[in-house]
Length: 209
Length: 229
Image (cartoon, rainbow over all chains, first blue to last red; front, side, top):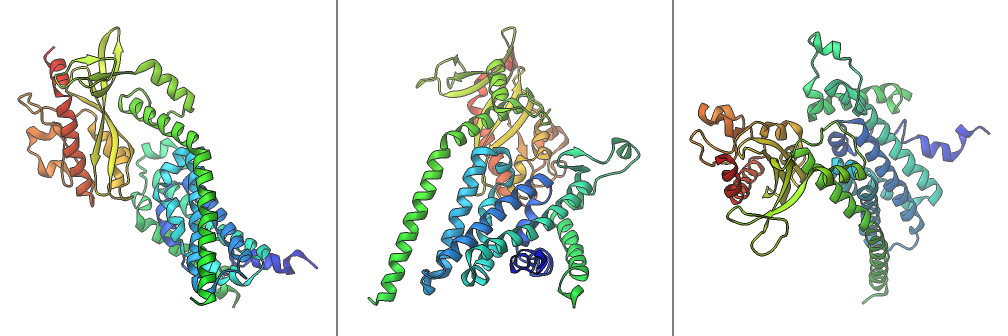
């Protein structure tokens, strides 16, 4: 039996490819707009988000038989909020400048629709291991779109990637200018729009159908 | 009360206790590191405002603290502009000096300004002539990203460089922040103390303008003495 036919593989890969949270469900767009002007904050955001998503899924899944049904949304929120505060505290202690750059957006992970969505739709009905993989997969599915978008934005908007100058100085001397639009919100809409199209056309549900 | 409702209450209470303990533990355990980071960040911003640290320079926390120790001297001013190394009831205004051979080369003034949501903390630095602004930085705020939070961006901060806090007659006016582009609002003879505001963040801009003027006017006796030298 190849690894591709195991349930674990499917649970992990589906949210990255066919059911990508950003490209197919258009969830989590707010943070994708906000942090992707540069690559580094995007990567940190993805790590924080994936951490929160995986462990909130695991926790909710572990508690799924004991959570009283009438307060389950509140319980999910408490789990998510606690994990986000934990991630924020660690960033402030060990990566202060990045934490300043991300400012309110780490706190806003709490309201990221993907996390609540996965807790409700997946973790409440599946075992911790699959929930963990689902969280990881969704985090990375969200993450790869964020990184791709931020590479385009930083390269076209500032001429750098991860702070290193990519577009040579001689280009600027010949009259090349950075595209200011890419740093602003419309730049993200255009980039994400193109990505959503490409993802759904070639990898997603439509492409397979 | 039905047993189901009671069960929900017990579960919710247990959940709160567990999460509260976890977060308190993390916050207390990491507090020293976080405070240290904040201190380094403040010193970094003083150095940046004073032009002792380039934006492109990447230094470790220790290097920043060492440079701060080497270059800056913290003194306190009284309301009439006298200086003391110790803070007391008379000498209340903190001031960061950079001296060359005993002469005051430049000085940094800490300010706090109320924006839209909360206090904005930062530094404004002037040269030894007591008139020309050489730098402006913000190290803590809670303004809206993309709008008021632009006050921490280089395009906004760099505008302060080379501006003056006096008008053409030499009277103190502080730095004025326009609504939009300053050239649309100011008369040509006001250009040297006017800068562009942040679009969509008039309250933040006006808050900085108001409190900057208040702060600088407290330091005015000291600045005036330097101007008259």
